[in-house]
Structure formats: C-alpha cells, structure tokens
View 1: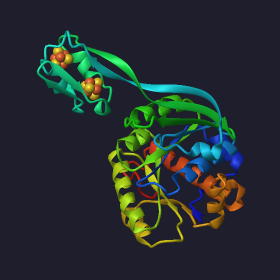
View 2: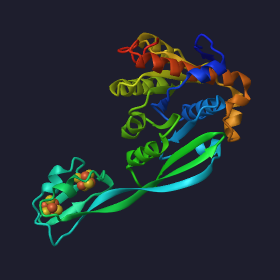
View 3: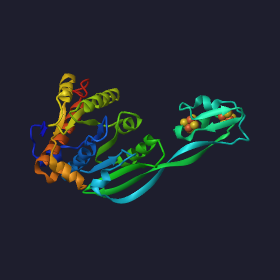
View 4: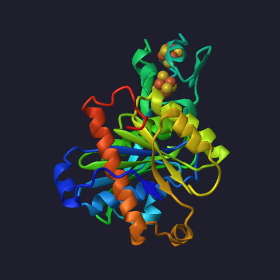
Length: 317
Ligand code: SF4
Ligand code: SF4
C-alpha cells in the first residue's frame, strides 16, 4: 500500500491551511474496480478532518454508496425532462422539428410527427422552432435525487428509473443539488461515455481507478483519453495492486501519470465489503493512506491553480 505524502504538516495545521473547496471525481473505465470503496473512504477521510464534505453518487443506474454509508434520507426530488407533444390540428408537416432535432427523435411522415421518446434529450429545440406552435412540452419523469446525511457526510444520490436511458439529466441534477458547499467527492458511473463526462465535467481532479490486468489497462487508456479530452487533472488509483501484471505501471510510467494510491488485494477489505462496511479507517494503516491521498490531490490541484503545473495535467508533479 503506497501513497506519496507531502512534506508532512500536522493534521491540525493542514486543516487550518486548507481553505479551497475541491471537487474530486472517482472514475473508472470499467465497473468492479473498487471505485465506490475509494469514493466512500475519501469522503470519510475528509469528514474525519472536520471539513464539510458531500458524497455525490452519480452512478445513477446502480447507485450503491448508500449500501455502505446507510444515510438517513432527508429529502427526495423527482427528476423530469420536458418532451414534445405534437398538436396534430396545428401541424402542417413542414418537417422543421425533425430537421432541428440533433438526436433523431422525431420523424415527419406527411402530416404526422412520430416522437421517439427514448431518443429525446429534452433540449426544447423542436418546441421553440416549430413555426406553427404545434408543439407543447410535457414533463416526463426519468428518475429522482435523494439527499441525506451519514458519518458527518452530506450524501446526495441519483437514481434513474427502470427503462429510462437519459442518465446525464439525472447526474446534472445530482451535481446541482450536491455541489453547494465544502468538498465534493463524486462517484462517477463506469465507462467513458456521456454519463461519465457529465459527472467529470468541471471537477478539479479525476482519480482513475483501475486494476493491474490487461482489461484494467485497456479501460484505463480510454479513461485517460477522456480526462485529457476534458482537460481535467488526473492520476491513477491502483486497486488490488499486488495481483496481476506490470502493464498498468509500465503504461503510467511511460505516460508520466502518477499512481497516487495503491491498495493491495487484502482479504480484510473483501470481508468488510461483504459485510456492507467499507470504512477502511477501521484498519489503521488505511486511514493514513487515504489521508495522504487527499492531501496529495489538494496539493496537485493547488499547484495547477497557481499555474506552476499547467500543460502537464495528469503527469507526475
Ligand atoms: S415543425 Fe411543427 S408544424 Fe412543422 S412538422 Fe414539426 S410539429 Fe408540424
Ligand atoms: S426536445 Fe430536443 S431532443 Fe427532444 S425531440 Fe425535440 S429537438 Fe429532439
């Protein structure tokens, strides 16, 4: 287990000095890498420093941070998106709506307009641009956002309704509701597609979680490409670091990417996980590991903000 500690200010000094608010996304090119374990433990670490922190579960198709934090839910809000309803009596079949819909959610056949609701992103273009005012918007429920508190952590999670596909809209609401005050830890969905981009966009730092296997390496390279395309500073967290092969480490070395956190394949972690308890601070050596990880991220972000490390995003400082 490793981290790269800063020259070690005592915890009290650090808390007093650390004023900036951090938004840290925990992402992974694939599921099952330990993303949630790291997100929950980083949030617990920040809370233990006495700092306000919000954990945002943006893995809205399968949110599971709550299984481990067991928060008391204090708020619930449905998430709707506006979708078009065509008033047939006004429609003249001009086709403007289908032409402006970037998502191909509308087809005009004669004077009939077919709406493919699953493809509609609720952008409103058809509504605003229909020359006959033949389109009205109807609110369609796609999910919900819940808020609660646990272990001194403010907790916000999104849940996409079964059968719905527009997870970015739910993720947007989670972030709107969650990023109010204090540090934010964002548990992103797995992969590198639109939902992940929505959860990573505008964050201060992205921690890419992977495992030292050929699959882990393949998905890490995609995730690195995403972080670079979004110009987010990033580093790697290597889970089960003592298993597998050297591929991920060689890649990171070649690319100048810092491996900021390494967690071994520890049977005690698996046992805790199986019990629904992933507070690793109960295993004393891990408390320091996550503490160092958080401080390292704060230092890297600060360095970037000061312009010292510009142009080397994702590279070891
Ligand atoms: S833009 Fe309006 S009038 Fe034209 S086809 Fe679409 S709904 Fe009908
Ligand atoms: S609201 Fe936007 S995405 Fe939905 S059908 Fe209209 S133009 Fe297409």
